[in-house]
Length: 504
Image: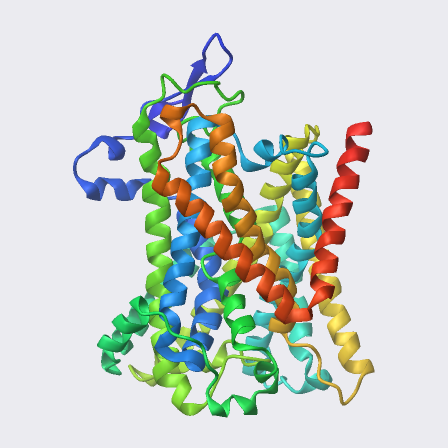
C-alpha cells in the first residue's frame, strides 16, 4: 500500500506487518500540520453532537445551570483517557480490545460474547431513541403531537427509520453528510454569536468548570413529573452515557484506525515486539482524540449556557415530546427567521447521529466475529447488523404505539425513560470495563519500554473506578436489585455461551 496514505509495507519474515513512515504532519514542527491527522475522531464527535448537545446539554443547563459544567469536563476527560489508551494499544500492537479480551481468565471469549449479548438489546434501543427524537420534531412541526394518544412521534420515527435502514444497506450518505456538516457549523456559529449577545456570566462559567457543585433540581421541576421522579444523580448519570459517545462507539473508533492504517493497526499478525516501530505514530491518535473531545467540549459548553440563560428562566426543559423544538430559542435572538435554519440543522444533525449509530453496529459485529475466529464475508456481517438494529428499533417503536393506544389515559413511556437502562451500560458501565482492562492489556501485550507511563496507567484505573461507581449507582437508582439481576444474568449467559462456543 502507498505509505503516503498511511498504509503498511510488505510483511516481515516474522509475519508481522511493518508500519509505514508516519505522515508528514507527525514529523513537522508546525502544529497546524497536525490538523491533517484529524479523521476518525470527527466521526465519533459527530455521533454525539446530536443527542449529547442539542438535547442533554441543553436539558442540563436548564435544570442545573452552570453547576453541571465541572461534571461534564470530568466526563470528557475520563472518556479521552479511555479512547486514547485503546487507540494507542492498537496502533502499537495491531490488537483490538475484543481480541485481547479473548485471553481473560474464564471461558475463552466470555466478555466479547457478553458485550455482543448486551449490544443485541442496547443498539436497537439507541436507534429507536434517535428515530423517535426525529419523530418528536416532525410531529411538532406538523401539529400532530397529540395524535394516537400522544404517540404520533413514534409513528413519525418509523417513517424516518425505514428509509435510513435502506440508505444504510445501499450506502449513500456522503452527500447528506456534507450538507449536515455545513448546516451544523452554520447553526453553531449562530449560537456562538447569540452566546455573546445574551451576556452570560463568564466568571460563573469558569466557576462551573473548575469548582465541583452538588446537583439540585429547581423548585419548578415539579411541573415535569417525568423529570421530578428521577433523582438528580440518575439524571446526571444519564448525561455521562450520551456525552462524548458510548463504549461501543469507542470500540468502533479503534476499529476505524485499521482503515487509516496508523502504525500496526492494520497488521494482520501483531508483532511480538514493536522494535522497528516509529514511536511518533502514537501522536496520531493523541491528536485525533484531543481534537475530537475539544470539539465536543465547545458544543457542550455553548448549549449548557444557552439552556441556563434561555430555557431555565422560562421553566422549560427538553423532555417528553419536546426534545428538539425548544432549542430554536437559542438562535432566534440573533434573527427570528433563523429558526428555520435551526430546524433544518437539528433534523440533519440527529439524522446523521441515527445513521452513524446504525453504522457502528456492523463494525462491532465484525470485530467480535474476528476475535472469535468466525469466518463470514464482511457484506453478510454488515447486512445482518443493519437489519438487526433497525428491525429491533422498529419493534420497540411499534410496541410503544400499541402500548399507548391499548392503554388509553395512561402516559406512554418517554424516549429518555426507554433509553436510560441501555445507556447505563453502553455509556457508563461499559466505559468502566474498557478502562479497567486497558492496563491489563498493556501489561500482557507490551514490553516495559512500550507500556504506558505511570500517569496514564493510574488515570485508566481512576477513570475506570469512576465509571463503575457511577454505573452501579445509576443501576441502583433506576430499579434497585432488578438492574443488577439482569446484569448478572447476562454475564452468566455470556459465560455459558463461551463454553458452548468452545465446545462447538
